[in-house]
Each structure stands twice: as C-alpha cells, then as structure tokens.
Amino acid sequence: MIKWHSVDTVLLDMDGTLLDLHFDTYFWLEHVPLRLAEKHRISHEDAKAKLYPQLRAQKGTLNWYSVDFWSKELELDIPALKREVDHLIAIHPHVIDFLAAVRKLGKRLVLVTDAHGTVLDLKMQRTQLNQYLDATVCSHDLGAPKEQVEFWEKLQAVEPFKRSSTLFIDDSLPVLRAARDYGIAHLVTVTKPDSQRPARDVQEFPAIGSFRDILP
Image 1 (tube, helix red, strand yellow):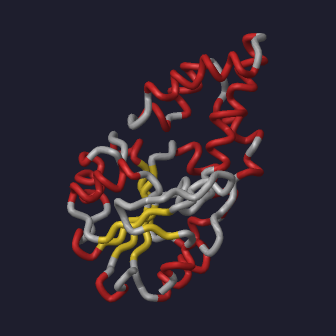
Image 2 (cartoon, rainbow, N blue to C red):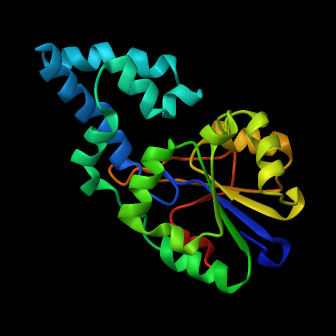
Image 3 (cartoon, rainbow, N blue to C red):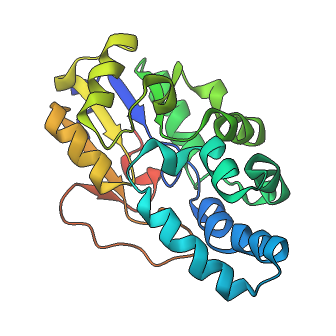
C-alpha cells in the first residue's frame, strides 16, 4: 500500500489512529452525561438528551475539541473528569512497532492533532508516545481544525513538508478530504478507530485494519 521510498514525512493523527478512540467515545457519551446527571439531579438518559445536541452543534470546529469551551459550557471541570477515566487511554496494536520501524527508515514523524493541549499532555504522559515523534502540532495553536484547509496552510508554515512525499494517516474522513484538497499525496485511514465498535467499510481512501498492514 505504501511505497516507502516515495515518502519523506509521515503525519499522524492521535485519537482513533494511534490511540483507541474508546476513551473519547466513552468519556463524551457516557462519563460526561453521568456527571451532568449528578450535577443537575436528572437521569443519565435525560443528561444524554441534553448533551448530545450540544456536541453535534460544535462538530468540525475547534470548540468541539476544546476542554476550555466545554468546561465553561457545561460548568464542569472537563480535564478533571478526563483524569477520572484516564485508565482507558490505550495505544492501538502495532503502533509502537510501526513508529519504531519508520524512525529506523529516517522518515520525519509528526503528530498533527485536533486534541486540546491539556488532553494532549494527559495522553502523552499516559502513553509516552512522544518519545517516537520528531514534532507535535496542535490545531488549537494554529487557530483552525484539521477539517479546514486553513490548518494545512498554517501547518506548512510551522512544519514544512513536501506534499508529494508526505503520508498522512487519520481516522476522520472530513479531515482526510481537507488534506486531499490541500494536495497531500499519500492518504490512509483506519477501519477500526474504536476497539469497542465494529470496523468501518471505507471505500474513499486506502484503509488499514491495524498498523501491521503498513509496517515498512
């Protein structure tokens, strides 16, 4: 799937790609509603009915990923709530093998994430993935989410890369479409971002079941 001699830079998403999306899925769909229910003395189901439309309204924006926004919006300490369930943070199978092998080839490894800096720090502390990376770029620092071509233009300014020899791996199809529109040549998605949910049938981009599929 990957002609490694044609790749100089590897851009990698974090949540759902390197890390199991189950942590984030459980956190927003179950744990936050639980704490909202306790706060407002309502049922768990009523809390979900209140929260889910609020989440959907922010999808594709920086607010969607911002713990500061949601802490204010929901009047909850979102970073503290994340630490309550941080034992669920997990690296996908074969990711470490993949990162080590790509480093051995001399390719530049850059994490590009929409995760808020606070969440990024928590996940790096938990997983120690940063030891395999050459750089990390957070969309909040650039002022645009990866779903927008503006992000890719700003990324080029802080972390220059040649589009024709860059591989980008992400679980989000809207993000991959934005990267394609920007001209990144090698795009790959993952079929199972969340280990607790069924694999997706993705036709639009080359897809891997695990990083073992593209080990150099």
